[in-house]
Length: 311
Image 1 (cartoon, rainbow, N blue to C red):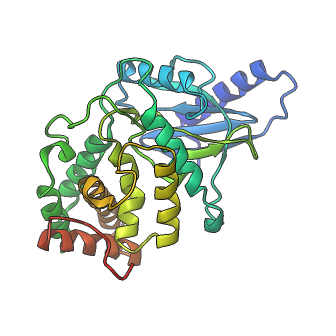
Image 2 (spheres, rainbow, N blue to C red; image 1 turned 180 degrees about the horizontal axis):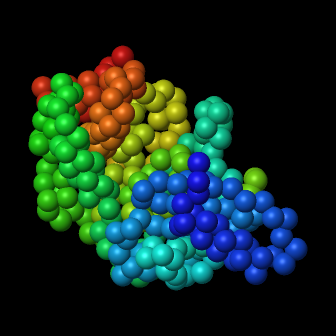
Image 3 (cartoon, one colour; image 1 turned 120 degrees about the vertical axis):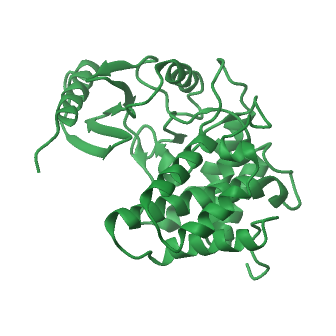
């Protein structure tokens, strides 16, 4: 398959930047991601990222500054500003070793909870735009509406309609001061320096101020849907609480704080899965069907997405 021009140019930029940092560069290149919303390449210990075409430079700039000023929580960029390549904003980062998807037992849930709590407790070092979590969820639902008919579309859209306006990006968030990641999952952690340095959070595209419970919502939703084992959820939640995370009470039932964001992330994930299945003309797999089923349950009993007592 031929390489598209952006990928070729970005690979060259990564190589050039790597050789400036390390003249005796061991020279090893790889494409880490090549999606419509991001192209990411690595050359030795340098990573170059072309951000989504609609990325706002005025919003990305303070996000980069924040990462640079919180190096104990966020992976700091190699430069605090972006550059432009073929109309795309490009940033440069040190390489960090990701979580091994083939070794779920080694997933760093405690580190994720600790880092997230520290992020939420950190004052924003520069004025930031709103965290983009609700806007991304709204985008996933909009794409689902355009994808075509399917029996599962109704339950997903019904669950979406029952969320409060702020969770659908139709009103300001009730918290406008807490520093949030905006898209927390295990793929957003790397070890730096690789391969066994401390864990750091990556990907500042959705970073901003907002409701901190949104950052706990994806693992909470997967737990509530029966897709994340209780032990792993408890490891994450306990570490977050032990580190003084403000999104949930220090003890007791966390679900009153987590319910709305967890429902929103369930809808977002179901909408994305259903859109991909429709695009590819295939049936939903077991995990995707579980997400749609959770949306259907929310439509019947919208007050809460708490896990069943069996968990």
